[in-house]
Image (tube, rainbow, N blue to C red):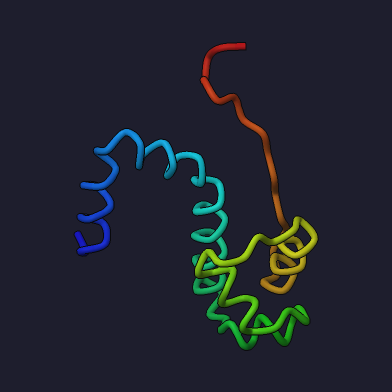
Length: 97
């Protein structure tokens, strides 16, 4: 386990920190998914920028969590990777309606 993961697990034991982390979880998921998809397709940020018209610095900001992309931007990034964007709502408490 890397140092970041160790530090994160320690911080997540603090209920206040965990609540803040959980509130931002969807953002972290989008970032992780974008980076993983780009790497899986062997596409650099520069190549993705050329395919989408989104600047490389903007892609970098998104991947570093310093941006708040619109659905249009996410859809454009997905298309640039030869993928489709899928957004879904799921029950917060599975099994309860």
